[in-house]
Amino acid sequence: MAIDPMCKMTNDEKTPRLKSEYKGKMYCFCAQGCKKAFDTSPEKYLSSQVLRCSLLFLSF
Image 1 (cartoon, one colour):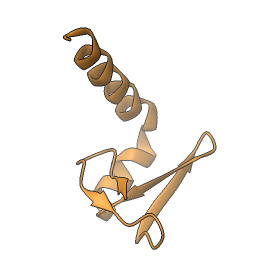
Image 2 (image 1 turned 180 degrees about the vertical axis):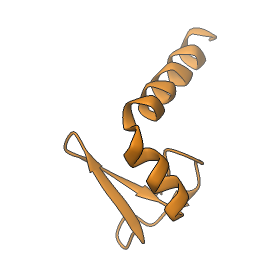
Image 3 (image 1 turned 90 degrees about the horizontal axis):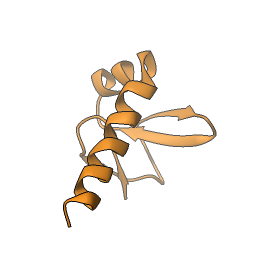
């Protein structure tokens, strides 16, 4: 399963309804609104994911 980077919903990566490619990686989306927001500013959303993961790791 793929996770929508915007809302964290799971998607079937074998048959995604909506997808975008960024820096050679494929991202799957549950809705057009999530895809549109990501396409407008992917670094904004990906950097916040990295930050959340880093903070989670540091909290252990």
